[in-house]
Image (cartoon, rainbow, N blue to C red; front, side, top):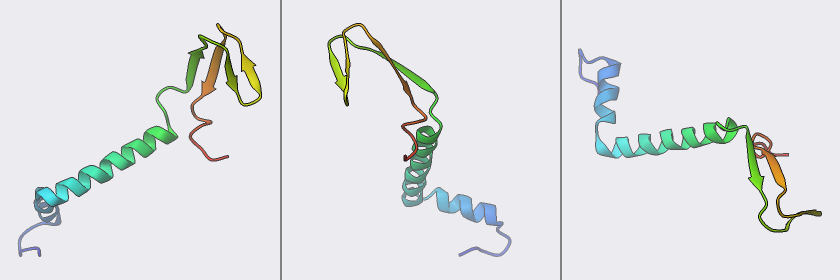
Length: 78
């Protein structure tokens, strides 16, 4: 409960300094950060080189081929 003369910011800060609130806040901040990185990845395209014959769905890729994956296409549901 807030005491008289205590600002809302001071009260919020005192709550956040308690360890049980810190853990909850840390978990939520981490979850938000991971979601932002999933939706807006730092690398837009990912390149892979096949070392051996690789099958992707119905497509067969020979050794030595390069594949390009658009990271933003994997972040959103179809």
